[in-house]
Image (tube, rainbow, N blue to C red):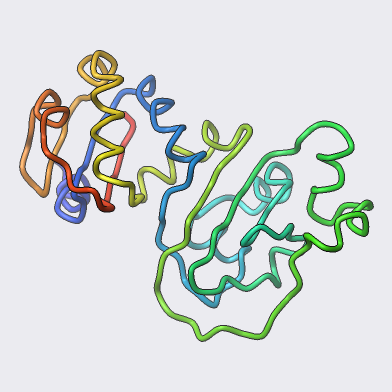
Amino acid sequence: MSADNEQESLESDLFLVVRPEVIPAFHEFLQRGVRVRAIIGSTIQSFLCETLELDPGYVERTIQTIFLNGKAVDTPASAVIPNDATIALSAAMPGLLGATLRKGSYYAGMRREISHADRDEVSSHEGTVLLKLFNLLPGDIGPLVLKKGVWVNGRSLKELIKKRLPLFLEGCLRATLRGTNIEVERLAEKDWPDKDVLLRVRCE
């Protein structure tokens, strides 16, 4: 095991090394929402480009719809992340609805009541946000988010592994539970707690 892999496994409840075909199995988690590390008090632009390490050009071109706590964001560089935030991201959606919700849209005035208004500064500190990815984004940036680490419900994780066990048996190259190697079959049998566990997934 490489030094990077060893560090990831030690820092995770569950660390998986998988083939690319396994990654789509986690899309339901990414759409439903996963908790990820964030600097509370930073801007959404900083979260996307510095914390998630997304290319600014990709953010500008592809992430066209951003919601912060249910409010559409027009200026990610000035929208500050509060405590207990939910951030939803989507690529461009079709039709008038998509055009209306798009950041910086000409039609932004049509959604004034659901638009995010910049608020007072929040003291900067480490925390987590609930991140939801829609449209093309689970496939595009899901692997990066999973590699950095997400918190998911333990029982939901067990159900996913049980439901897609043949896929995991075929495509999971290595599994490490709290720093100890474990067979995939045992992950499907384990009595997972009904609380969040830290999951990291590396695609090879």
